[in-house]
Image 1: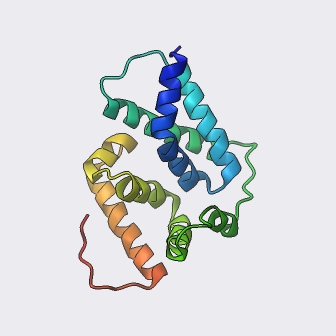
Image 2: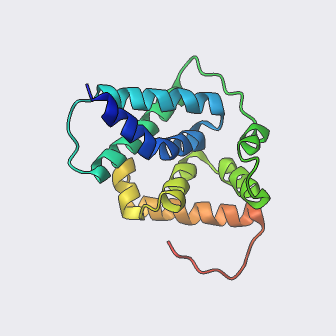
Length: 164
């Protein structure tokens, strides 16, 4: 079991990242909070040392993704989130960001987490492949397809180049 100060420091450092990943998967605040608590409880009870901060961050991402998948597969889970609820979480932000969030949440499940890790957390395709235990080319393909879908949904063709 970890020291309370270590758990508090880790929550302070990674809370936003874990919540964002949870929300990308779960699409509602209550399930996000449930998974968030489960992840940090698991961290508090996990006594093995990490090799580095990057290792700890990757572990937290993996545990978060796995817990979200478990909850999504759960027999008892009822899916009651609408896109309006998702948009409500973005209230107070730039209206364009709310529009983008809605578009991201409309993406197929397999693309949402990759988009989040790449654009919000700054991971490369190679790093995402390692975290999600997928082939690098699969990640590149999913990124490309997700960007194409977002471009179609948002109606944009600004002449931007593909920077995957």
